[in-house]
Length: 328
Image (cartoon, rainbow, N blue to C red; front, side):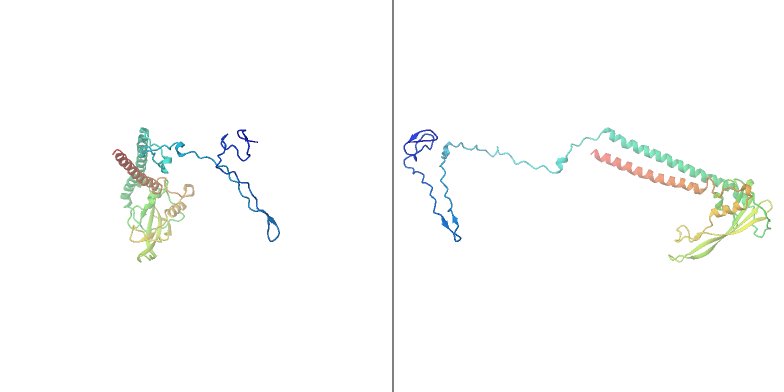
């Protein structure tokens, strides 16, 4: 007798065993054929090779009938979910925009008004400084222009020996007896404010000398040659005479005139006056504390501040247009 390992049933035939937990195999089914192995064969080298093993048939598994398989749940077209949409790249960084705050709308106009006010005050201050200086110079020149006509230039006047000049000095153009531009640059201790303060007259007899021609249009370039006469007003004697050569003319023709001329530097003429003063009265070689050279900066300030005001006006107008467009 043979006992089934599954259900422990005693069977007479050892090849008749329990397939489905205690149910005997039907008689019509064949018993499993024993596995056979072929004979060993030798190859040319005499090495024994075993034939390929024959796989034993695996036990049959019963497939349940189709009726027992629950049908798949049918889905209608309405229940079918739409494919998920892929979010664009920009939406990953999307942030909800907040309405502009009222504080931000007020800060810019306030800062703009403050900048405009500060620039306007600075521009007005620079303009007044320059205007006051020019008005004072005009008044001084008016006080001296009339009396200057009474002075006569006499290049053949007698010479004073070993004499020194007295301050203050009035520079005049020899050809026209008008005030020379050097007057505005004289130091304070040399520049007279009225005719009574004039002790010495500086006659400047300057003539342009041709130094070459420009390649642009063939116009001449000049270099001034000046004869400077220091004349004592009281004695009308010539204290000192010296010739000065102007600076080399500009390399390019100046747009402001028909010709370019190299002028004598004011520093050279001031040094000439200082050298002929008494040693105890000599001061430093420098311009007046309120000379035009000092006020060039104030003129530049006025110009630059005006430009800044124009730019601020353009910025304010642009902001106003932007705010109006944002309302619609």
